[in-house]
Length: 147
Ligand SMILES: CC(C)(COP(=O)(O)OP(=O)(O)OC[C@H]1O[C@@H](n2cnc3c(N)ncnc32)[C@H](O)[C@@H]1OP(=O)(O)O)[C@@H](O)C(=O)NCCC(=O)NCCS
Image (cartoon, rainbow, N blue to C red; front, side, top):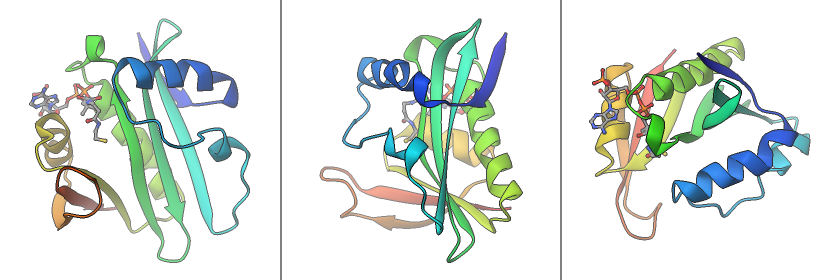
């Protein structure tokens, strides 16, 4: 049984292991997103669990200045992919964005990340731009869904 819930700071060591195992870049101090108080932004991290084991993770930011939400991380352990868990995490981020009154939920991903692009297209996201300076090696596509 898969459950998605808000992550707690105590989940961080497991989230970090999951990211390393799946070769996700880990350049930020994720603890900040549990402790920082920024009146202009709100951060939310979610985990997907199967029988209590964390197998997926997502992070979304809400920005007050333009009432938008930005999904920063979305990761499902390679062993558990293609079972709808990415969709569940995406829908949870969307729920949070709507709850905050965001107009739009956005995302960026590499132009050749077919699993991610298909997931977003299937969930109503559309390409709204590109940036060939965002990553050091590949072009990034921006995707957005009006809420
Ligand atoms: C992208 C990712 C989160 C998808 O997670 P997931 O749990 O496998 O996704 P779902 O099972 O909910 O898939 C939903 C849809 O996405 C598309 N999709 C997912 N994986 C795909 C793949 N390998 N190839 C093609 N389409 C794929 C399909 O349309 C799928 O629907 P279907 O299974 O009915 O055909 C996962 O592949 C992942 O963690 N990748 C590495 C990290 C990453 O790239 N994150 C996103 C950008 S930051």
